[in-house]
Length: 252
Length: 206
Image 1: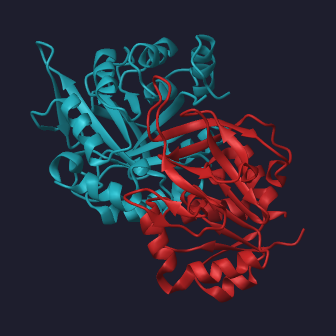
Image 2 (image 1 turned 135 degrees about the horizontal axis):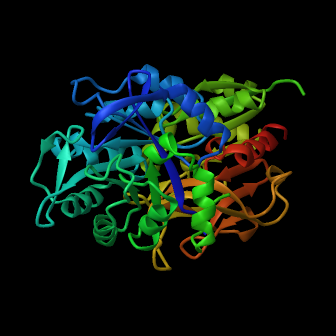
């Protein structure tokens, strides 16, 4: 059986690990390299690294930094933030990324997702979709670390990404991010029903039962989380024990 | 045991860094190369690879890399294909039309087809490898151990004897192949933590 993936998300700018609430109020929560070493020892299933400043500050990925932390990673890693071209993807893969997350450029650069999928294979293309829930229940995709409105529905973007060759969707609720109040299960359900590629739930995990719900009610193939691991005593392995005890296959 | 020189085939297809890191952790010396003399000098050859079958073969044919590798394999050099590198061992790939492969292990590469509800493609994550036969790369690893996969295609062997590992997804697919000194793993040993390192160390200790 394929196991549920429990994925700590490491958000960073420069060499610092950061975490915010609703993509704002960023605070420094430690050293990136240190965090990688801890997660290595804990044998986590996978890691996601996102440079939150790259696109907003107009620079591309920091390849040397990625090279540094990727060398320490004995588990699969997805790297995102500032990815604009297929050449960026080639360099990220060369310095040790297994998969690359594309967010802003997936919306703004026509043809990029298809180009990456053809050259490097669908399995390395993660389309990262950040969305907000508006009054009245409409959801809208925002790019550029949640600062740029697009008018696009996340379900529509997920479907389009799959058609173009994306291998996974990383679906993040901006409103829930950092709140630890639970994932937006309805959005996860809608997106995972709309596509046949794996969906990673992100934004809002504060308890193990939230993660379980993302899988059993939302249909997610993986759960990503940051605050719960930074700010509470809860750990990836305990989360998996809880989820496993409720009948979902996990790797322990 | 003395450190061995391990040729890591450089043909422009993906994540060579992590393969080299894993080889160094096993106390051997990776040589990233596309030169026939390095293949000849190496104690073992690893064909890594991420990406599409057609591009992979086109890159191997450039400068006749496929021919010099085939000579070393025929001479008995232990060779391990990882992920796309395993798929390239087959006779033919079917990604974006048919492309001839290296043909070292008879078979073809086909797209995974979901059988059970909830099976999504690509197959991404940790899944079991059920050992079949007595492949030396399993020494010290229990059957059913999880390894890390990320792929949409799989190796369909012509001769069942060449299938030495199976993984339960999409009705079950061949995840490890072996024919004499040629081995292939659909999973990424270099990303599969302790079990993956043991698998790789077993290969390098052949």
